[in-house]
Amino acid sequence: MRAWAKQRRRLLTITATVALVAVALFFALRPTPKVEFRGGRFGGGGPMPVNIAKAENGEIPIVVSALGTVTPLKTVTVRPQVTGYINQIMFKEGQLVREGDVLALIDQRPYQFALEQAQGQLARDQAQLRNAELDLERYQNLLAQDSIAKQQVDTQAALVRQYKGVVQADNGAVDTAKLNLDRAQIRAPLTGRVGLRVVDEGNYIANGDANGIAVITQAQPISVLFTIPEDQLQAVIKRVRDNQTLEVTALDRADKEKIATGTLSTVDNRIDTATGTIKLRAVFENADERLFPNQFVNVDLLVDTLKNVIVVPVAAIQRGAPGTFVYQVNAENRVSVTPVKIGAQTPEKVVIEEGLQPGDTVVTDGADRISDGATVLLPGQTPPAMQPGAAGGQRGQRGQRGQRQDGKGGDGQRRGPTPGGPRGGPPGGGGF
Image 1 (cartoon, rainbow, N blue to C red):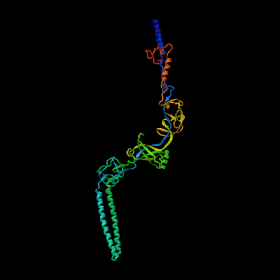
Image 2: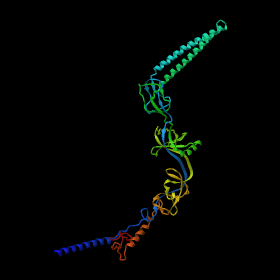
Image 3: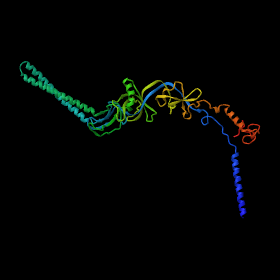
Image 4: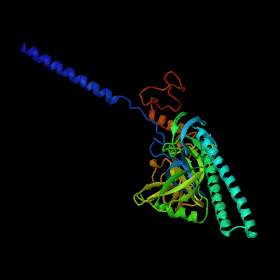
């Protein structure tokens, strides 16, 4: 039994060894697939595709951006100037009213009665004045005839002057009564849009009520208050003192859509030491009323416009060990690192103060895949691997390398006499 067991173990060992050798031979003799080489973005050594732009003479605006608040030029709380019950409200909330429009009516009867009383008092005192003037005239005639004492004439003259003063006071009382009667009609003090109503009909209101009856804000024109850093003030104040009009653009919160265009109105008289900024006010016509009081907007202040300067797209500017540079493309489609000195810029373009000339070609997209001295593929050009004849030539070379002298392909199979036969490969003969 021991001999049989030993013989069995030997047989199993031999069987396992043969199986391992067979597996090793299978993987060692299996044909290796050939990978076709193609130049380009994912190939090795081919030109990299890039986008380019030309340096050109142009204009670039010098813009100061800030965050602003829409502020009405006038805001008025309409308060009653007389006391009484409100008989009628004559406006709607949100209505655009004109200066002088009647907004509400207060009970006018007490003021009408006061006017009539003042007018009656005036009529009585005017009659007394007229009588005193006639007596004075008679006394003066008698004094001329030496028939009356001069003292009586002087007394009568003083009485006339007294009545004149009373009549003048009565005229003032009549004017006051008329004014109070007119104030019973509450009118709009300016042209603007009415806010929400504070009181309703039937309410008793008093002179100088703090809440008033409504608030009117002037919407046309309207202003925007914004702040800029103090180091940008000198460029602005120079243009203001030269009596030049500076354009201001208001944009939405996303800084994408233009809402309105206005002009700079004034600059504050001091800098805020806590923030290092200064306030400015711009005025907008706001004909479509897109600017709303207390609305937050982005503001672009056009300080100046640089003309006849060299500009390139912002995307062309690179930063690295040489500092600020661009990849410049020559006539042989080779790039070189060109240091540049940049100036003012917008979100799209930047001024090149030194380093480029008009007409120079720079890379705007694909700079992360190239280096100094690399060959690039410009838009509209065909990669070398895709040119006619190049692909066929490469396939022919692969076919020649794949065939053996005995007519068998690289995979050990014999090729037929014609392309595309039952065992024939593609034209050129290279097997994969």
